[in-house]
Amino acid sequence: MAQATGSGGSGEDQEELLKIVGEIAARSHTLIEEFLRRQQTAAQERPPVDPLSVGSAFLELTARLMSDPTSVMNRNFAMWQDYMQLWQATTLRMFGQEAEPVAVPERGDRRFRDPAWHDNVLFDFIKQSYLLASRYVLETVREDHGLDEKTRQKVEFYARQFVDALAPSNFVMTNPEVLRATIETRGENLLRGLKNMLEDLERGKGRLAIRMTDMEAFEIGRNIATTPGKVVFRNELMELIQYDPATEQVHKRPLLIVPPWINKFYILDLQPKNS
Image 1 (tube, one colour):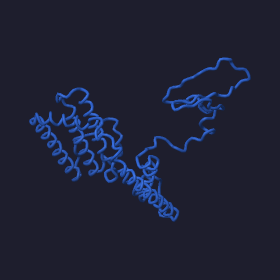
Image 2: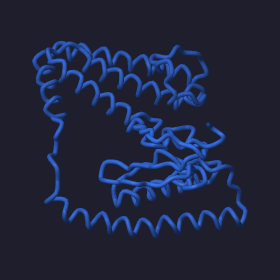
Image 3: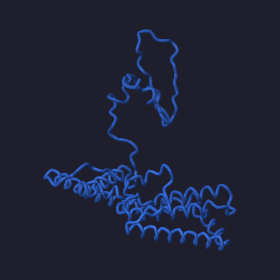
Image 4: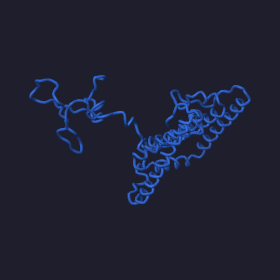
């Protein structure tokens, strides 16, 4: 989500906000039409509902858990004890007293680095509630339930994705940083974030195609593909580039370089500033 810098109440700010809203409205209309069109043909082209058998892995875990109800009850009881301690600690803090946290983020967890996650009683309670719930889920799936190693790893991986997705830092109303930026920019950050999302949807023709880099950062001949040469062969898999010689005399036998596929040929197309 883009966070614009300070937005006051000037006419220029209002004009910019109206412009953003107009762009969002126009793009939203087009995207809705594209979405409806896709839905008409989706039933015929729909892939398997669960090609990775994630659901069956969790069903197997559930069956193993139900076969040992005592263990499940003990873990639930321990979780409720933790929540009771959290309620007591939160109540003490609301009355201005100090209280030790019941759950703390793991070292290096950048989601809760903003001071408000600790200083504000409400956000601290939200944070610790989430940490307790996520800890309960992950510890439960990590226990030895007799699953084979592949199934256990699959369950743990998707359980981690699930709890990470539900982190309060991912939602506007439970993220103090986003709320602060929203107040400071009078909502402009949310509009710009929505605008960016619509651009990603447009790029994916109704599906999210999230940008991993600045799509306008490079210009052919200026800061990419600057080395003189030409493509002498091309097929569906590759391009063969013949670079122009930089000296009057060259070897009779050309030098063929096959760079790593991950970088394609860009690693050979260095600029003076980084060569």
